[in-house]
Image (cartoon, each protein chain N blue to C red):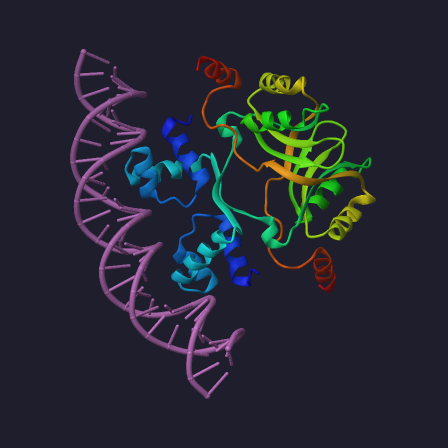
Length: 159
Length: 159
DNA sequence: GTAAAATGCTGGACGATCTCGACCGAAATC
DNA sequence: GATTTCGGTCGAGATCGTCCAGCATTTTAC
């Protein structure tokens, strides 16, 4: 599906999405029209969902992040989901198996804001909140190479 | 700190980080040298952490995502953190308050891989895993405008 | 209050980059 | 073995980015 050149391009773009076609071409050993065409197809196929910018929330005044686990009360699932989606401070939300129905990331400017937002959900769901103290791994894509974890472990041993 | 033009530029770039300077300039009503200078300063100040690309994990064969809560055994905190950082399938990890020390996102290609990875942590930490069934909100930045939630609520009422 | 300096913008020229079309070669298809 | 398809290169013309000079406005200094 993806060949080495595609993965190579993606790896470069993950680090800098504004790399020029010319530079990309030079780094992977193709001409720029070819790179252009490959990017077009990666977007068309949905491999590349978007070129975007990673903004420091702190620069926007969001000094606090929290992980909120949300368990809607019986019959309230859809209302709660809609509510979460409509609160822009939720920067991420996953619907998961298990007792907690949703796990979401919340950006807030103060503890007061955190309280205010959770209050809006309080009568429709049980929530449990964990404040983020540090981010050992900031968002990164999974490995682009085709190797499975077992293969990788083997490769490491071979050294 | 950030003025309206900066926020405007960021909003456009969040949707498409490869927008040309010329287009950016036209959309915010500046000349392209001015836009270029503003972007340079946004990067310099760390507001823009990176221009990057959002890749569909499915296109790389990662058919499964999970949220893993990790509680290292006494004395194992640092070893566990290092371990997590070194496993590239962890696509995100936050250190949080509360009983669970870490909350992490895991990309895997199969249930077998999931099991294999969790096994590598099993003797150093307790984990509890929730499989992601859907993603109501995919990663998005917090609101760029300066309004607090209270202000926003007021503004909505005023309509 | 005013002069000086600093800041941030514009416009135009020049060089770099992108895009388009024509063409080519290898691999798959018939 | 001929033909089609696919992915690539090259070069020309169009587009874009960067640099520089100049200008207006605000800030600083005296």
